[in-house]
Amino acid sequence: MIAVFRKLLTFEEAQKVILEHVDPKPLGFEEIPLLEATGRVLAQNITADRNIPPFNRSTVDGYAVKAQDTSGAEENRPNTLRACGAVHIGEEPKVIIGRKEAAEIVTGAPIPEGADAVVMVEHTERTGDNVRIFSAVARNANIMKAGADIKKGETVLRSGRVLGSREIGVLAALGIAKVKVYKVPRVSVLSTGAEVTEPGRKLAPGKIYDINAYSLNAAVVESGGRPIYLGVFPDDLAELQKALKLALASADVVLTSGGVSVGPKDVMPKAVASLGKPGIILSGVAIKPGKPTTIGLIEGRPVFSLPGHPTSALLVFDLLVRPVIQMMAGRSPEEREEVKAVAGARMFSTKGRKTFVMVTLKRNTSNRMVAEPVETGDSGAIMTLAKADGFVEIPENLQFVDSDEEIVVHLWRKKMQETVRSR
Image (cartoon, rainbow, N blue to C red; front, side, top):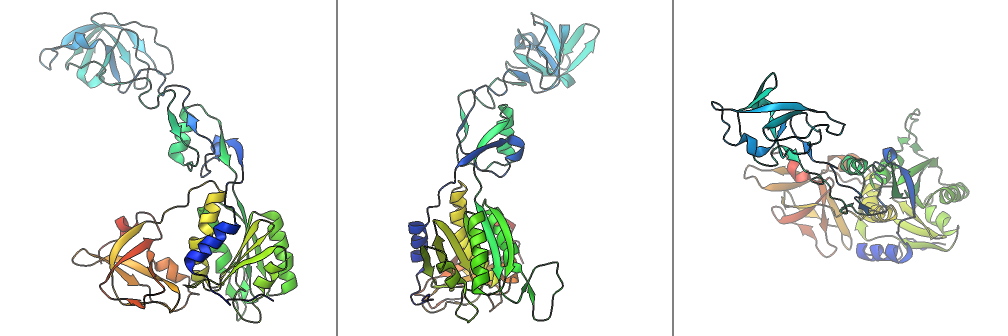
């Protein structure tokens, strides 16, 4: 028999228990094509084996010249140089620039020998073999030097970097076609409950659509994991044992929602405990929402059993599960951005539990940031999170936060404070 919620752990104790039992380290690495590497986490330092650009190149269309030959050139008193050829992009220059000579050049083409500047085409005029220069240029004008972007021997990307469009561009610039990345943790996701129906099916009376599995799948992807959706299962011990065995066999982490409270149908803790040692390592956390959270460990694989209420499930995922998946994916757990605000209304805590109050942000007429509690008393309302810009933590020993009191808001999205508009 599982002693459910006999002793609630504090939020900090829960974090400690997870790290003591679960070893959230990367799961190894693999080499994949660069075109498939977007969103993956680099598993090696990248050191440039060449200069980028590999040669001095023109940054404008114009004429490659010796800068000294343009000295004194003005609109009403141009210098005249002799055209000695042209330099095309993608090929080695076939001309050498001598005194009083100029070679036509296009943007991106290599600078020919003898030239040390480029005059923009709009500051020139060509008649036959004569090129008139109407504006003097200094040495190195309109030239991008070899290695100006990336220098040979420079460490351009470090292990642990998430590969986005900019990083992929850097790797492509170095001619790298395959890259070593950390393996993606696989996360089995399943829902429980006789009332839960998969989206797309006809909704029978008394049923609700499965919010949790779909939102948690998305949260897993956002954390750097690969979700494996297993579907909805009834609150039946034998069925759940079978589903959990399948989940454990196919993934590195198991994520369930529902069936963790104290009702007769809440058999998830018993199902987890029956599958192996050490079984349940945490049963109940002194937080609101999220008190029924249960965590197990089966043969080294964590099983996070979250409450069935959507707001509770997503909040607990964000607080306790996301960091584990991120570390297993080779990422550093993201520090949530914070913004200072004043409470727009009194916010109450629940006695003995750290309380997370969802809030929206706006600026008042004095341009102060104001945090207004999202109006809901039901942790089953998914719109609570959809409306919220962030949340406020109220400690266990604090009865309430008073209206107009300065508080810290933990933001759901990065740079949210930049998008909050005056209302």
